[in-house]
Length: 286
Image 1: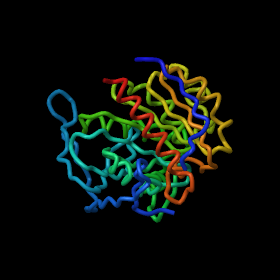
Image 2 (image 1 turned 90 degrees about the vertical axis):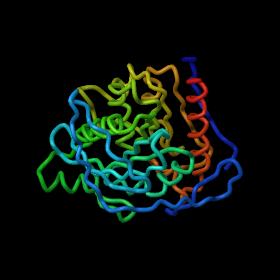
Image 3 (image 1 turned 180 degrees about the vertical axis):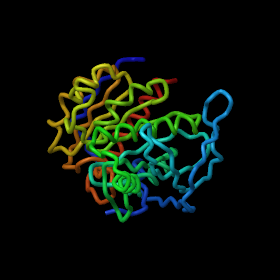
Image 4 (image 1 turned 60 degrees about the horizontal axis):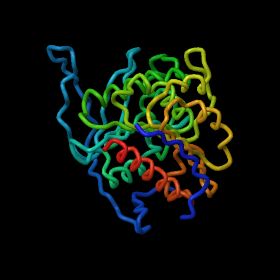
């Protein structure tokens, strides 16, 4: 893999709805996703111990799967086909998978399947209750930031077991730190990491977030609102990957993945940076 360490200081191009940004001509296009009823996926082991792939339903469906400690996790799937790469999206503190209600549709429009996850640490967002956190509270599970690492791992494993395609992970605030510290375990499957506003929110395996990223080899994209870049600079510098991208927006931006929301004035900057990084990864793979 060629070595690429990019520091983007600015892009001189430039809540919630279902409009999808087209960063080529700044026009808006609407993607309609048909919603289906909540579905509990029954995972049937096959003889070799692997999980039998489920029958995919296109549009929006909700699935359940289980973390290592027995907690059931809720996630929304936004599927456009059987073969496109998939983004796994993790929300910020006190929120839910509702953080990605519209971001998922934009990623669909870009040609990606999406899986938006409820972690055990959270509450609600955009009118969508965090079902995993609710379940964790009712059943007495510990729900600190670091405990949600089990939910991140289970979600990545779920995607590996059910989708024969490239996987990207995106975290927001505390979950951005989570994806940075747990993704290396799945390095053979994860093609890229997108971390929005990571920080030293917790320690993991007795180490800081920065210390945990020293052996990270997966292509990594880190960004945030312009007012909080100092919070993750050391983390970025510590990332071991030769292929990493630090995006410093020209505009103000927002904390976490809110920078991608239509209601954020500078959202186009962030979307263009994502598209650029994806293009670089794909070109390198060729």
